[in-house]
Image (cartoon, rainbow, N blue to C red; front, side):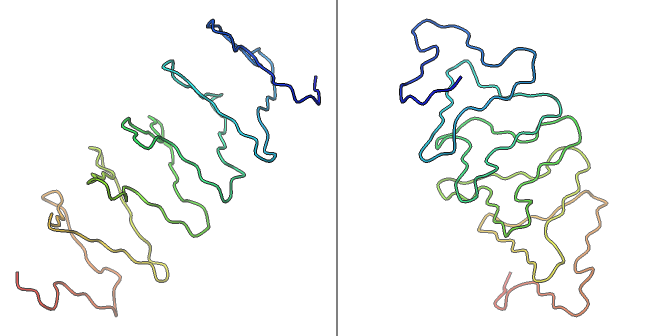
Amino acid sequence: GSDNSGDAVNLGVGTVARAISIGSSAAAHTITIGSITGAASLALKVGTGNFSLNGAATSTYNIGAATTTGTIIIGGTAQTGTMTLGSSSGTNIVAIGAGTGATTVNIATGAGSGKFVSIATGAVANAVVIGSLTGASSIGMLVGTGNFLLDGAPSSSYTFGLSTTTGIMTIGGTAQTG
């Protein structure tokens, strides 16, 4: 049922541990917890017993679907554990910033400590594509005093400027001495 009272509703708030089930029977329940009205809030907490969010094999998880100007944060400010997206033995797609809007994707951009970024480093025949030929697309690759290494297998071929017919290729700066 429902009511219009401002009284607190408490469920399982005693000091004795117990199992609490909501809609866990074998029926197609629709369960709504929380509201988007005003300053409504929802806090899900867990102790050392872990947290599991699971569904059927074909379930869709929609996180922040109506959040258009808010912020979604995953992980703590002092996170030391591993965060894994798309750890599957099957063929899958991990799409980050894949919408049609103007998107900035920042990876390892914090200035507090040095980062080590690995992309497609598994011991399999990975194909990596970075960038686009469309319009004013550009790529900037920068390096500090740690040097720059471009390497491949002994039989690798290197092709530079394959589609460049009227552009300019510059190697070395105007004051290059090394």
